[in-house]
Image 1 (cartoon, helix red, strand yellow):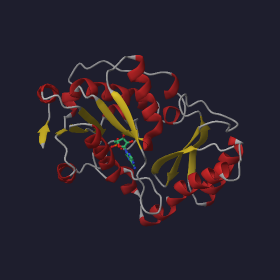
Image 2 (spheres, protein in one colour; image 1 turned 45 degrees about the vertical axis):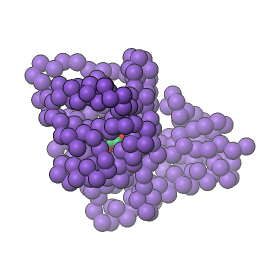
Image 3 (cartoon, rainbow, N blue to C red; image 1 turned 60 degrees about the horizontal axis):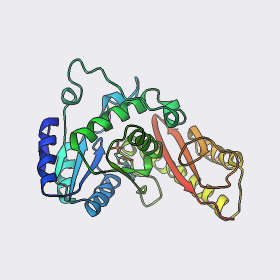
Image 4 (cartoon, protein in one colour; image 1 turned 90 degrees about the horizontal axis):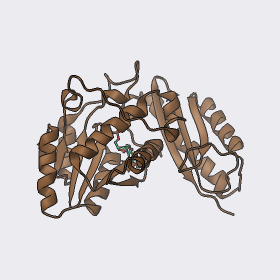
Length: 283
Ligand code: AMP
């Protein structure tokens, strides 16, 4: 497994791999690798001859007062896990490599960036889009693998790739969960024991909503979202948003009469967690 720290070395590496005719997969991450990340690596390994993982805690996507400084950085352990997972190369650039002095460009995507995470975290998706486009150009990957865990992020990246004709296939992979249902996340490390026990309510809310829609044929978004708000409050969590939206445009919908995505964000103490599920409409 190669460890690459500069954009030019990454471009050189992928140019060589391309000559062998192999399809190249990219898995962008911020490190603190867990089974969620490794599932993306597996998907890439299945679909591509070479998998490149990037590890970069991107300062541009953190707002003032967010957790950039305390974000877990566990590089040594990450590299061991990625080696075992059969990754060809890990791209670990420094901040100066990605944003050298004088860097003055931002990628802004409209529409799908406006609600939910975009509203709660101004500038977040500009930071995400900017770094991801840089990674796409540096890696020249044929396919890039993202988790449904960050559902809105996948919508944003798909929109960028479509609007800018970036020649990369975007693959969305399912959410990997802990045994009790909590979606895996690097931020779960922030939770105290008691907070961790409470955090299970997020996925329980999603499961309740799935049941309401698929089994009890509840169609009203507001009824479902209110049920979730109440449940989160009872568990001592503070909901940031709970919403049901069109899975492609992310526009909120009132009646679930076709495919829909339920998205939520909530705080447990100082930790902010997100989760989502696709609601299956059944007649
Ligand atoms: P992060 O390191 O948190 O920026 O995540 C890097 C990639 O891993 C993103 O595409 C995430 O959506 C994905 N990811 C994070 N957690 C999970 C999970 N529990 N299941 C599947 N993918 C995940």
